[in-house]
Amino acid sequence: MLKRTISMTAAGAALVVAAVAGCGSNVQPIQVKLAAAEVLTQAARKTAQVTSYTVDAVVNVKHPQQGGGKMQGRMVYQSQPQLAADLTLDTVDMAGRSLPGGARAVLQGDTLYVKVSALQDLLGSSKPWIKVPLTEQGGSTEVRQLLDQIQRFDLGNMTQLVTASQDVKAVGTESVNGEDATHYSGTFPVDVAVQQLPADRQEQARKGLAEMEDVAFDIWVAADGLPRKLAMNGSKQGATLDATLLFKDFNKAVSIEAPPADQVGELPQSAPTN
Image 1 (cartoon, rainbow, N blue to C red):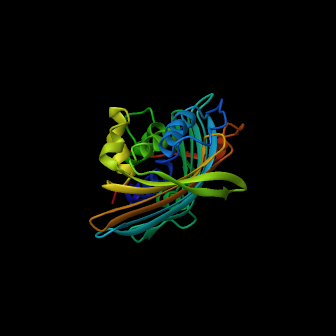
Image 2 (image 1 turned 90 degrees about the horizontal axis):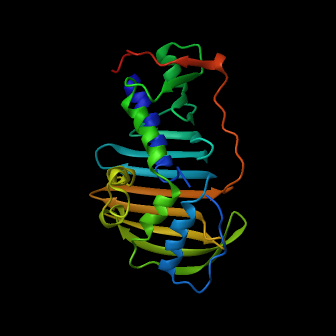
């Protein structure tokens, strides 16, 4: 049961953060006459420089055997002075199992703090938070995969993926969170897109996209060349993925702090997994 609970938390968090963790500054206004493909190329370069941002995300998945699932949450991210993220999942529902009260995870460097009521009850802990040192050899594989997702996936990578599109086109100008942004629409083949990423990130990218064959996307890029909204959907043999992410507060100062020490318990080295 412990493994399943942690797995649900990590899987849900991974779905949300797979598209969001990492990004920078020194941006300049894009040229309105650029071709759609060139806008995406420039966006990929600019997002790779972002050092902090906030993202609101909704992810829906469906599998013919495992059923459907929904994640909805928000994450604040920074890459400097150290890697840190504060992720709140208000809705976690995977394959018919839900986490009452949702979940929260705070990453600070090599340490992950997880707050899940079901996990706290299962461990019989009086502390609301569980500390997971990610540098140790022991611990949960699922939680380690969450760190891997946070470290390896970033907005720059996601915009790099959409540059593989051969049919992207501008479809108009719209307002996103009160900002004017140009709306681009297209598709990209997953196998071709992930080959543009470093070799050690390609397999994780495929998993983050639920191993879809082709993905349709819509991306809204503001005048500074940074995406404000990204929507993706794809399907394969009855499995579907539908994700919408809204980005804001690029390069603004953030405060991501570990929970108070007196509220943190340790994850047991050996715990029930059934």
